[in-house]
Image 1 (cartoon, rainbow, N blue to C red):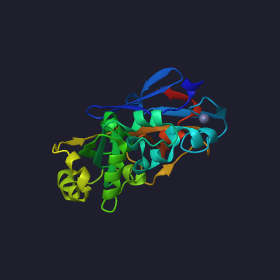
Image 2: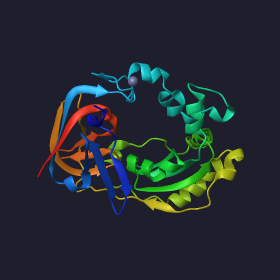
Image 3: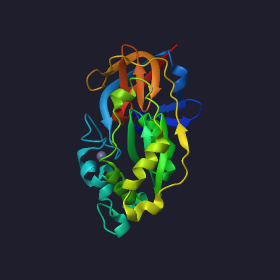
Length: 265
Ligand SMILES: [Zn+2]
């Protein structure tokens, strides 16, 4: 059952980002489907991580019970500045939280729809940028746990957004930003006890996406509204499929939906 549900596309940073969608036991090389007709049909059911199948998930891809009990859905997942595993304080499951939080994290600046600050596990660096549709990114700091990255992010929030404007991100290439200059301007706001984690490497990663045509007036389509979504694939950016008639489909927000996925030549 699990293999029939939508999961976010996997990404690989090549000349343009290479996208793969694994569903119904098949691995689809999505870049090959550009300018072809794709069809996503929902069967009216969703599946939670716990394996429960139902009509609707409660929040953030979880059923009601998982959302309120699992460490994967605890408040610190959404607000890293609430992490406490480095102090040996349990939120929901200390063993899980230690494994998840007590590992190297990056604070980065990215340009997807304007500059934003974000955090990510060190192992997820580039993947996170591709998932957000960033066109440029630079690392600002490398810290030994998730809490410290959250603390830096909170300190920078008054000066730079921590959100991606997905409509803007999907409407075209963002204006070029001198991320090295911005990084050096923002460094002074990093709390003094965390300044030692600032990275001196100013390498900027540039990312290009397989997009033939950007939508003009974006219409976001959802399977709850129409259970079959069908159209010409005109591009992929972040975790969005760009379809004809200015439509975009957010794969990530449909994780857990049990669907059929087909392509016509
Ligand atoms: Zn569940």
